[in-house]
Length: 426
Ligand SMILES: *Cc1c(COP(=O)(O)O)cnc(C)c1O
Image (cartoon, rainbow, N blue to C red):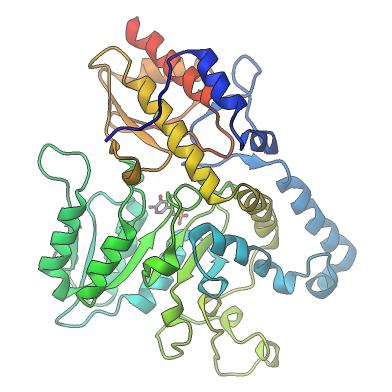
């Protein structure tokens, strides 16, 4: 199933699509690095580190000023009092992933949050101690899972079940994922998948996987590192028990910025759920009585440990405001066309030069296409860099190109593929 849009392989056509793009103004809200010619680069690496929103610096500066002006009083007297600062992003983050505000909190970083969620939702027993995950998941997820398994005293080789593509195939088939859950679900404590695989760009069917896993009595979590701000997801309705994501990829929060956590409403009031506790997860009304006994806040906020870094949150506010203005529905609509245009142009390159390993089905991918090239990559990478095109390379032979719909346009995609073509024909 390829993309349904009628496209043309000319720069004039790409410019025409840009002119009628309802989201085109958002490009001006970002700061672009400059290429060798001094002009803004074509930035296709937003799946790795998103660009800086124009307002990020101003929002951070405001908090620096309030700190200078008010010292400790900034917690209450600042323009945006720090005591409640993280709440400024909760509703936006919830809209972004299709959740209720109660179900979402912005805190920590992704791998930390993954551990905190597994503390609560990976509760192995002798009969049911396995974790089902993607083979070749992002390394941090593999390390987190393996260390949790060992922490509970199980053997990783026995306890971690990995999903692998069929021989000769690049990506997983949904039927195979569901089949694995059906066959092994009774011994699986937790099904943990990405929403989009970082390497193949494949997006998984969150509702179908969640339903199948719950039918077998498993807990279900998703890592939305490459999904948040990329796909339109509906976590509340789809019903996984938890999800985690980072904010520096499609969400443009800046390097190392705070991640997000979703805990489904059904767990919002389970006070006895084991968790690692800290004072910021304690009931707000009585937190400053400094009592000895932990009273968790209802919902995802109850998993907070520490008071959050305000400057990071300030940068994230600048980005999430833009997502709120654009809406995920409109971004996803543009993204399907933009990535579809990339696919269309790539398919017209000389045969055998490049193959797309990401699924052709629009529903099974986000913005990113993963490209496998023939030949050694160094010449190609240099050519792209010289042309002011930023994308990334994963050993041994994959180039990942992700036109983020918030700030990339059709002309960017056109320029990228023309540069590849120059290389293909040399
Ligand atoms: C980017 C990414 C991470 C990075 O984790 P941090 O804790 O934010 O450094 C982890 N898992 C996946 C799937 C990712 O794509």
